[in-house]
Length: 160
Image (tube, rainbow, N blue to C red; front, side, top):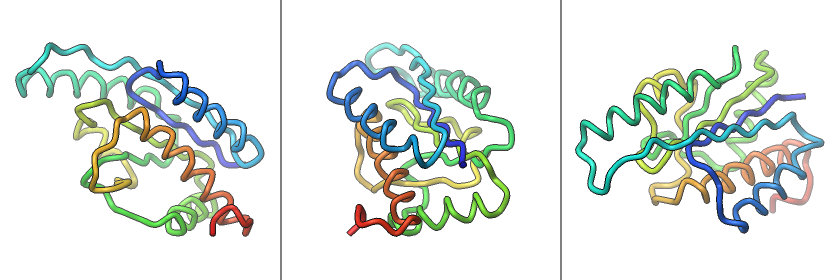
C-alpha cells in the first residue's frame, strides 16, 4: 500500500475545510496510508518587502524538507508546475508505485508559495491550474485528486 504524505503550510481553521479534509481522509483509508502534516506559516507584516518574503519562504522550506519522508517521491504544488489531467495523475502515481516508490509526498506552500529549494528537490512540480486558489482549498482539491487517481486506477465509476 502506498504511503502518501501531504505537507501543508498553514493551519486549517474553517469548519467546512476541516470537514472536507476529514471526508477525503476517510475515503482514502482503503487505498493508501495518509499522513497530513500542518506547518505554521511564517508571520509577516502587511505589505512585506521581498527580502522578508524570501526569508520566510526559506524558513518554511527548511521545515518542509525536514518533514519529507526519507526516499519519498516529492511533488511540489506550484503555479509554474506541470499541468496534468486526473488520468495522468493516476498514471503518475501508478508509475511511482511500480517503480519502487512506496512513498509519495505532496507539498502545498503558504500564501507566498514555496521556496525554490523545495521546488528543486521535487521529482515533480505540479500545477493544479493557472488560476490562484486559497492554499486551504488547494488542500481539499489535492486530496480529492489523490482519491480520484486511486478510483481511476481501480476502474470505478467515481471518475466519469
